Length: 125
Image (cartoon, rainbow, N blue to C red; front, side, top):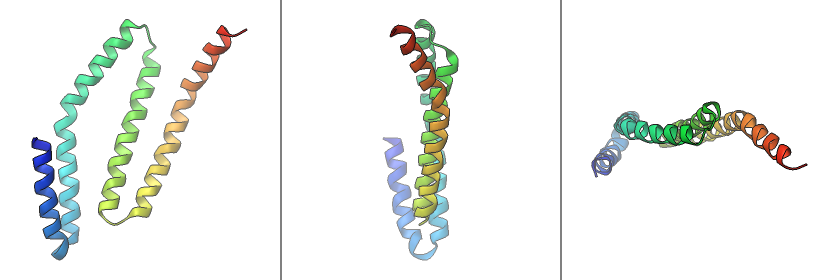
């Protein structure tokens, strides 16, 4: 509820500011996004601890888990950056951020895909 309340207040203020000072509206949006992100850090850490615990129980390699978590982080950060660019009226830059993030995710996923395929080749004669 607090996040939604903050978001609504910021949205109303941004609409008011956008008419007279659009650069302040963008800064307000960025600030709100950072505040919301920082408020969620504790919850993100809780989820990461559960995932680490489950992977330890399942004897999964922490290398692969770390890579998957980095991929998820890249996706969230890229989406956040792209949304900020769109809020600032820079849709072209937002598209480039999303494109770059997709390429980075693809590159980071290659070792995981190779490991899965190697495992399948060992099972299938």
